[in-house]
Image (cartoon, rainbow, N blue to C red):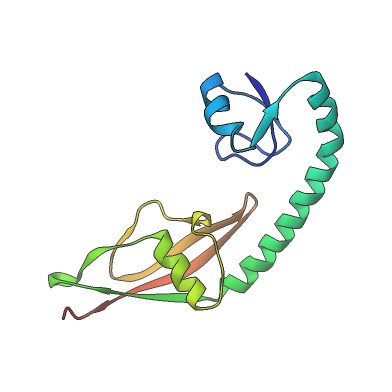
Length: 150
């Protein structure tokens, strides 16, 4: 099934691209969420017109993402967690925990933009990737500290 993407879809394509996907993926995911539209001849003509609008919007989003990356570059987040024997964490530190710590420090950020390959399960300093835009990636320093069990 041929579709035109309205927004960037990870591992599929960028907004404004013409893509071919399986019918189930289109019907159950892309179309209900307004991430894509059917690639009819009228929509393809409309796409040519909207490409300019989409490009301007992407430039604006990229600019704001670069500004946000500059603001977050020097930020260090400290997260305290209970630890057991041999400094093992009870639970783990996830992207949601990092987003909440950033919000407490005055930086609003969607947790889905924080890229953790797997949750942090140890004490120490970590560098976490934040994908603010498809072309803008910022690094955030996260320190996980232990607090005595009690």
